[in-house]
Length: 206
Image (cartoon, rainbow, N blue to C red; front, side, top):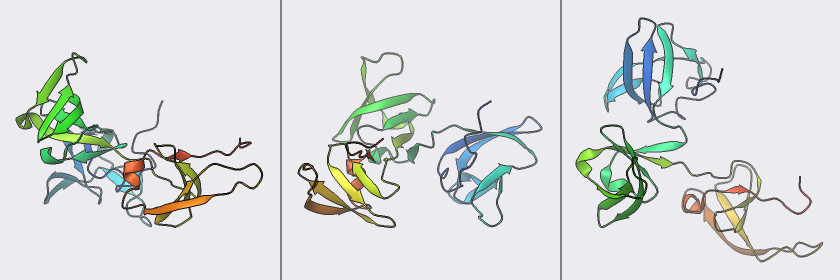
């Protein structure tokens, strides 16, 4: 049996995702998780906190509340939620009020075009009146020191506890492996546009 999708997560990691809570009584509750662990019906109304949280680390989820049977994630934690139609861009997933999902392949002049779930070859203009929210895959950024390759094939050096990366240009030279520094980019500025990153392996690495 697979582990629950919330196991080992913090409330912050699940913030903004829709969940379905099933109580021991059989009743259900749908809502959006907040960073404090509560389900919110609106921006200022908290309904219920379905999780038990570790006392020393308030946001670490360690189990379900006694009256809760299960918590099902309705949104993928690898995606962030976009609540404004105007903020949707190419590559996002448009989620309609009926629950259908449409990959967005064009977002120009305020008009969104996507593929219908029934016919992959059919283009549809996505109406803002259908819009519930959109999903955007979270960028895969460096999470440990070392060499990282971006989506364009450029190699970057990322240092521990650093907010910047350094781009390395040129090619490795035999033995010396000389580097040419091409510039820096702050993680918080442009690195998301270069994602996804993956660890760069030197010749001979396992």
